[in-house]
Length: 128
Image (tube, rainbow, N blue to C red; front, side, top):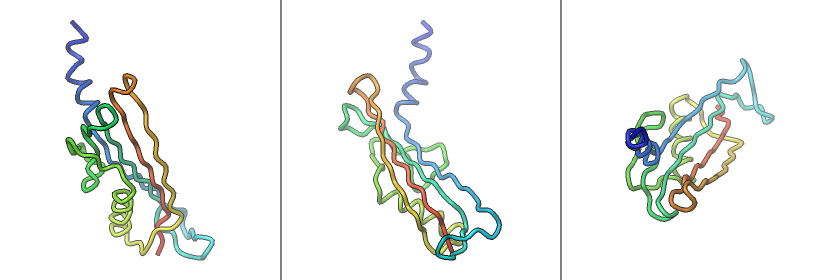
């Protein structure tokens, strides 16, 4: 009986995507090797769930990162959306550009190939 009570929570977990922005302020007076002022270092992450590795169930809302929101039946996990989140953060904090941009992607199967969770992380140093 307890397993049936957990089913709605498990369904919510498996059908939610997530988009996050993590901000790290620099040390006072920090500069890049090129002499540019560092505004902040940022990491953006987006994840999605798909059924049978093909059919998208949900993914993070890149227009509202850090909110409890997802886009059902869409896959927003791509480099274009990562850059979009970094550009939005650069505009928010007054940076003129992003340097040292690094991206990596990973995925994990759940219940063999029934469910696939994809994640993409991008970090950048925002400068003036």
